[in-house]
Length: 262
Picture 1 (cartoon, rainbow, N blue to C red):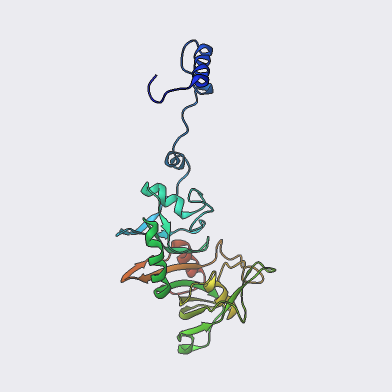
Picture 2 (spheres, rainbow, N blue to C red):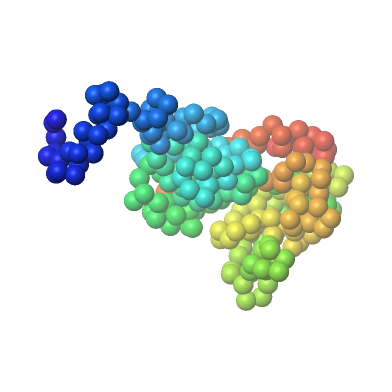
């Protein structure tokens, strides 16, 4: 026998196991094979192939599809983009920021955990622009297209189980610019100057223009689209600019709402 030496009790158990199997070394029951590695187990699951917008200098940027969290409860959770990207790249990645489950668009990961803090600090000072399809109309004529800044603090309401605009909450600031107006809907650009949870959704609902497809921040919930119409179109930080085109489901929705192409 090669390797480490066995003490008396271990030798006795080894001899008993050999006798029980006709002199052959014991094998796992029913011919079971050794437990597969984590990467092998991941590979056997259904994996969503992600569109990679950028992969250089330790930074990987994807065009996040709706229906997945940015990160799951664990890195191995198939409900998160992080899991699918790790399988696709065959190595772990770390998320720099978050997008809601049904928000699509630019999502940034890094290949080294040590890069997370640097990119988070850069994003706090960077430019984050969303495209949103919202209910209602804003003003008339050229006035409708003037940028509007929403400076309204937000806080989590445990009773309602959602974020709300509330005095004394966390500072939150967004700029909204109308780019197309339909009969009863608008396409707007939302630039976030802070990064609060659900900030764009809360601010738009607060000023009377909830997202089309919004179920949490609109009463009654909007059933016009399977998901809320919000897309992270552009992120600029550390001298880099990452952009993701509006996905087909939102382009089709915009046409239904009578909104012009950008």
